[in-house]
Image (cartoon, rainbow, N blue to C red; front, side, top):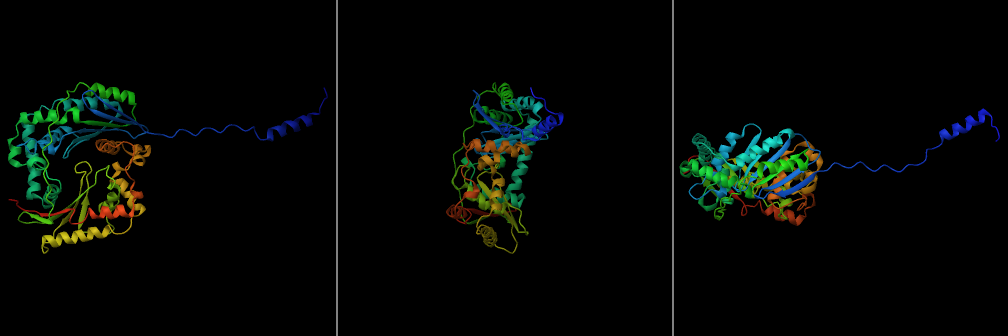
Amino acid sequence: MPRHPLWLLALIVGALACSDPPPTAPRPPAPRPRLTETHFTLANGLEVTLVSGPCAAPVGVVLVHGAGTDHDPPGRSGLARLLGAVLTARAGQGRSITVARTQIWESFTVPAAGMSAALDAAAARMARLDATDDELARAKQTVLAALAARRGGDAALTAEAYVREAMRPARGGGWGWGRADEIAAVTRDDLNAFAVAALGPRASRLVVVGRIDPTTARASVEAAFASVVRATPPPIRDANEASVAGTLVFGDAPAALAIGILVPALDDPGHAAFALLATRLLRAPATPRGWTARYDPTVDPDLLYVIAARDALETPDAAATRVRNEMMALLVPPPTDEDAASARAHFGAAFGDALFAPARCADATLPLATDHARRAIAGLRKASPRDPGATTAAELDDARRLFAPDRSAAIVAGGVIR
């Protein structure tokens, strides 16, 4: 074997060290974080959605019961409000109760470690209210005070309540905030019997969103709710016809104006175009204006309100015309990217996948749980009916007509209503 000088060997080793390493296979990209949805129904009828993934703490829980003010029994208009008042008084900090036309919503957040105990407590409320006479008496005071505010005590609340009745009248001769004589007549037995039917699992829906293990969470849900009796929900009352007829006046000192605009349903093809226009009314204005727009997708998902003070020198019709003209002027310009982004924020439940991304869950869990519940109630899952950024000119023209005087109601109200 030939011998090589040491300096030659060193040169060869150095050259090898400086040469490029052999190519290696590219590493696969790291898996992107995602949300996992699990849907199931208990034997007693409770529908459940679990959303798990890289979410913020704490866990968001929404329990939607399938009865509301439209289910008040004949002669007991206001019963759902009384139930909501009792639940609210018991709720404590961190849990909110919302009474809507066809649902009662219970929403709260809880640390993941305390989720099982919180679900057990929710199931106990669902199974048995057992309200006391004292609780009923306090609930009557609360509901009657709210009713008085909407029967002339507060002009803006009165106008809003009456425009709601004009556009979406309470069923069966009831009234959305109850009737004082019928509220006064409610007994403890009435309330407890209604609670078993209204809160029961057969027409209810549970949504849990957070950094949870779906298998463990499902076991907790089943342990808490599976034994709750499958009660028959209260029947919904017969519908009444809407009474939209120009500008209506209520009370002896009408000081506030409310305009009600119908919101297309989540699964309506026109919902996206409507949202694109309505968001201009809902956004904070660059310069002050004499009216505000309000939309609560939980309490009144099918109505958008525009509320204004009436100038004492204006006739009711002049006040309505002034606000309508200002409102309609905002709807004329073509949509912008800002409009689309704002529509997704205000009307998020309609616009599917982008708003159910991990980034949104990492921000907060309860809004996401609420949107999942709204979509499930509307029969929607992942698919989005239409994104607001993809609306056509014809769709926008159709949506503008929903704001017109012949498609909306204007109420001027305040003072004593006889």
